[in-house]
Length: 390
Image (cartoon, rainbow, N blue to C red):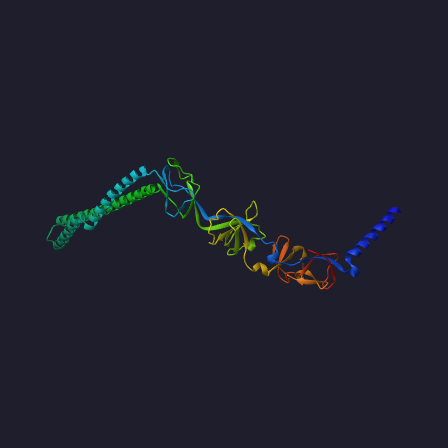
């Protein structure tokens, strides 16, 4: 009996509680949040450090002993300036030998050209063939008249055929001599080019203009093509790389303008998004965005931390509402506004999501109260009582 009474009392208390929550006369008691303008929605700030346009590690193209170092840390060099010198004694001897071989081959080729153009080896054979041919033609006429014997005819023909062979041999020999001399010259030139490059590589120059850093060299020590000798930072331009989560990546297309705040210097520079990684990092799920800085700082800001914020009025054109306030049915997306003491169903067009908020492109103005929680199901035009404003 006591259990039955207790159950009835509990049911009555629950009924009273539900009636209190629903308000007087079935009026909904609601919690609302004001729609926020884009500029007021926790400003998006990204951080990164200022980097040079590029860093190039300089390595010699071969191995050798360092004979002199012409730069020191923080020196500014121009593209093509000599950075250090590697011992070139062996390369110089090889270069002199290659030059001599090339000169010899060049002289032989010039002689072959002169012989070819002067036709000195072929001309006598051409004269002999012409003479033998004319003689055969004369004998052939006489042979037709019966004035000469067959043996004379055959001897004249054999002499002409032999002269033709000698002419062919002379021509082939002349062409062969030219081609051989040309091949030897080409080979000597290739050998000279190889040795010349080896010699030139002993003088290591800067590939770009910039600041010299991280020098690993010592005079008298060996260097190789597998080890970095020093670094040149291309300081003709600066950039900042930032990591961006997938929810925010659409805010940063290539060409987007940004304010870059250098707190240490108390300066704000302008920047432009120049590159967005095509895929996110597998470990972090974040995208890398590169922002090129415009000239404007009188100081070398490389290495300083920077705060980056978007510039533009696009963010002010949209408003944001809590994601949980948006409902969807067959008619589309909608929210309930609290206006003039009533719930007003309002169709909306959604944009991008940012954390717990959704961008509303159409349907809501900044500052309007959006119902995010209600004691009873809402209906368009029904009265509401605002209990909490967030």
